[in-house]
Image (tube, rainbow, N blue to C red; front, side):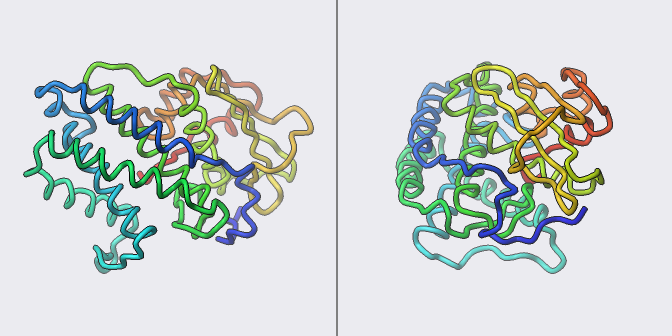
Length: 285
């Protein structure tokens, strides 16, 4: 199947729009509680391969500044693609450059700056029009993307990095369903793009169900030219995958690999289609 055209006005295949705007303030507040509760030793713990907790916090600050500069302030100066550089390579390079430059910033100064700038980010998103064109979301296969998806994507990134900091310092995933439910809903918008190379008769449906208070059901339907989250479920799906929320978010962010997720999943119907759905990834990877 071919990927759908990048037309914001014809993005119904992404499913019902998500309004994450009001959640940036509570996510920011939760980040501040997490950071201000860290010990000096915690800042040096590895949060993700190659980055400490301090590095990951610095990366978040770079994300905050980038969003405000680009979308609030109309600032167009900044890093550009090197010849032949892919999007993934570009993102990883500029993120590392920023983190390296911030290594001179103390944890206290970093936390205070994140508090100041993060509040501005939350206020910015509150003012956005969810239906205007915005940055592309590569893992959903749309460029430009509607602002509602771009905003929700940023919320998932901020939330995910906070969980990585929590895990690095011996804390469990924040179970607050108010945030986690929107994170999971956003991650599932990658399903049509994940299935883009899967050929199936029109009307074939694959259901992903996530258990728990933050979970839900998402059904991707083959339409003949693409997969869509907008079609009504009108029968028994050809394949159904049931995941717990912890497995689901870790899979979507590649904290675990598909084989691990499948080992924890309950599958009904066509296993090959279920395995295809479990290739989902909702970050630039």
